[in-house]
Length: 382
Image 1 (cartoon, rainbow, N blue to C red):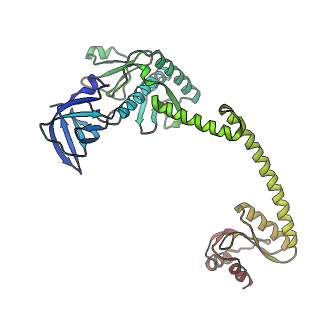
Image 2 (cartoon, one colour):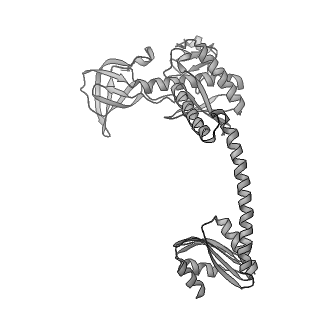
Image 3 (cartoon, rainbow, N blue to C red):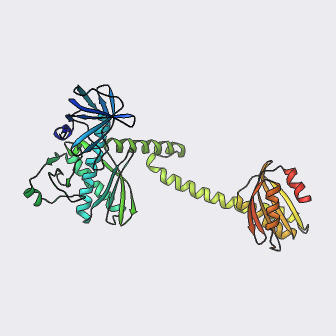
């Protein structure tokens, strides 16, 4: 016997009573079948409802051959009449996301003659895949139109048309359908075959916000938020922009220009620091002129700086320059031979003796060692 689906009769039903038809243990949980239910089973990209069935928590719901199975954490008695309570915050969130997706997809598919070929209602965001090359600007235009539909607040229309009516209807569907088909319509936006739960009026979606539009397979993947999710996200973004603005002494909407100024200042500072670093490296190298080799210890610096200092010293000393930058016990190193001769054997021995790792070729090597300065000095004196 098929389960009576109360969620189709009234998607806003939060509490109901039902009779337990069966309860079977399965993998540490219990699969419960009721004569009727308001719990929506996972399907069509929409996750299952959660909630309570008597004193048992409902953690999953799925349908097979018209029978709906409720996964519960406790056993219930067959024949018992129980009260089911839907986790309404979860359900309404799913309704907002699903209805918002319909409105946006209907607009996009009509405008660009494409299909919605993928839909995932995740815990954080909603993703939709389309088999058309939709630009960011086009996605934003569809977002604007979708929100106009939401603000118009027209009632959603749900129907089970006859085969003849269905044949004459222009509707979206991801697959070929047989049997009784449920059509969900949002006037001025979408007409689609769908088994999910939806809001009663477009205005209950609240708003739709497109977060990204990226190339995906033969089309694009949109990431969106609707309703409460969109409100919370935009609120968090504003709070962050406000905090950044306070740090930069600008208003939230002026943070981009302030960050661009900081980037320009940072770029100039880096260029100045690099020029000063070159002067310092030249001075250090000059001190090693003609010595035939040098082992130097410097404060921690970036690997590229270690390499450039070693290169400058090698060309002035005329032999092997070994630069170790860091603190006692951990150094980054660079070895450079002015004549470009192979130093792979030396590097291999250095890594073995000083607990190092790294390598190179043609007179250059770079890596790190776990050794004290005294150990390094002994290695090169030996």
